Amino acid sequence: MEDTQAMQVLEGLLFVAGEPISLDRLGHILKEVDPARLLRLLTALTDSYDRSDCGLHIAFIAGGYQIVTRPEIAPWVRELEKTKKGARLSKPGLETLAVVAYKQPVTRAEIEMIRGVDSAGVLRTLMDRKLVRMIGKREAPGHPMMYGTTRSFLEYLGIADLSALPPLKAFEETAPQAIGPMPNGPYSEGTTLLADSEALIET
Amino acid sequence: MDDGVSYEVKLDSFEGPLELLLHLIKDNAINIYDIPIALITRQYLETIGQMESLNLKVAGEFLVMASTLTHIKSQMLLPISNAEEVKEEQDPRAALVARLLEYQTYKNAAEHLEQRERLWRDIFGKLPTPQIETEEEEEEIPLVALSLNDLLDALKEIMARVPEASVMEVTEETLSVKDRMQFILERIEADENLLFEQLFVEMTTRYVVIVTFWALLEMIRLGLVRILQTELGGPIRLFKKAPSP
Image (cartoon, rainbow over all chains, first blue to last red; front, side):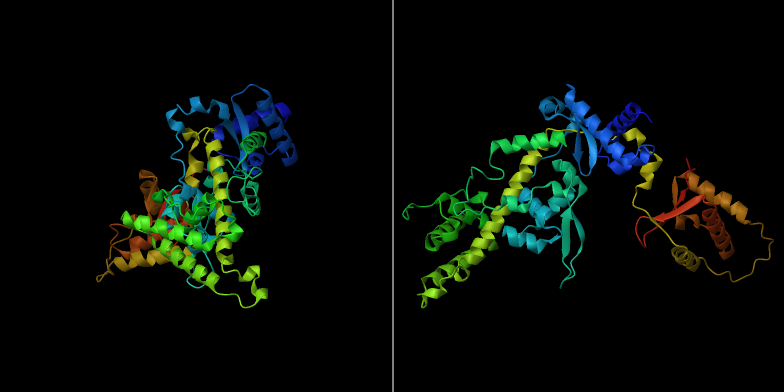
């Protein structure tokens, strides 16, 4: 198959899939293209989106590729009824989600130990929103349930996979006066956000 | 810092004692590794007192922390007999500081997630196209394929319901496996799938049940029917096998 045609097929598949589609799945459909070439073509396709003035780009999230809109056009896209994304997570929700994401598999007791508050309700909300799920029971007295994040969690935050999250160490504050805004903190600088958004588009 | 300043905080904004403590530490611009425990304990108890005076239900966690703080405070007041004991490990505040730092780490991580959330909310993907959800989609219902044993167990249940004929019918049986296969196929085609038990409704003799079951096994063997259940031990459903593409 010619490169041009293969790229057309890839573009079509990404367009129709409507969800992140993995390299494996693409390779399964495009049998005549070997994985290395597939990756090369996908990169070329992604580049061609970024080079053009197209309103779309190809993102790598939840272990797959997806055609998504550029953040700059969000105000207009949001006007479409079916683009509703649901309420943003509350602060306790985000906190609990962070503990689950970084400490999974984690029990409710461990989450509550870190947060210092009862977390049953928040955990249930996160499970209702399919961001967190039960992933088995711990081999310990009482066999407490263990929780972990879902694929929807990656999709919700646009993360390629769990290893794409910054290491927890990046969020530690080690300097004596560390509590409070840190000029060189991992998150407090405005530029970090910009770099992040670029990373999302690049990958 | 001024000990005399009375302390007012927005009470409902504190989800838990750790958050309240971090707030007090930040607000007083305190070095977290050297918390003036008397000051913090006082402010902490004041805050809780305000909560109570406003008839806010003070969660148990806040009270536990209050006693922890008071305990640390009393330990700090004990005279140190040996100067060498003043090591960081023996600092009564150490465990609390470690917890606070860990919590702060996760709070920072949560803030990072919030940023990603905000960012990603501006990015939209196309929703899956509904029209292409055909045969493949059906496959995605979490169904468990069954073994012959499961099927035999289900048959046993059916058989238990059918009364054993007390009188032998001496009529010529015209029932054939082939007829029964046709019967099953019609039943499944009527609604896309069929509960195993429903197949045997109104069958009054064991003979009919067994021939029908035989026909079903034959159809499974020929790949005309699939038997699946949504969970182990759950109801068994028969599906017409989709013609292979």
